[in-house]
Length: 92
Image 1 (cartoon, rainbow, N blue to C red):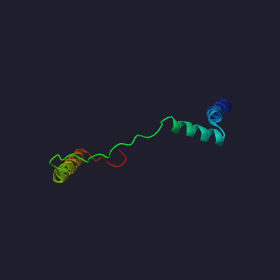
Image 2 (tube, rainbow, N blue to C red):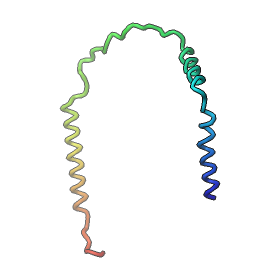
Image 3 (spheres, rainbow, N blue to C red):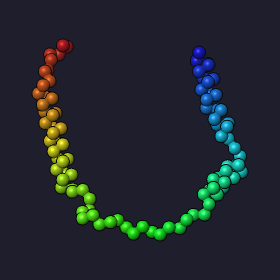
Image 4 (cartoon, helix red, strand yellow):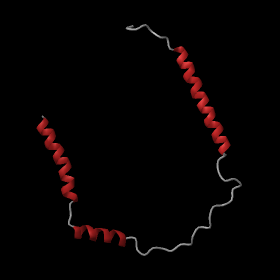
């Protein structure tokens, strides 16, 4: 059974590799055909820039406050969980 598995694994790896193997000239021609399929690039104007929205992004103070609150919540849950653990005797 192990030999059959090994044979099937080798076939599964070797068949796609053999199908994809091509000469360097064929690979270069395929790449050239791929890029030619797009035609000439269209030149567009540069974007004007970001629109003014009144603020520069999220409030760093708010983010720090939320982070501190989550840290306190995690610490409180850890303390609560530690109090509910009942120590057992050795070998119990």
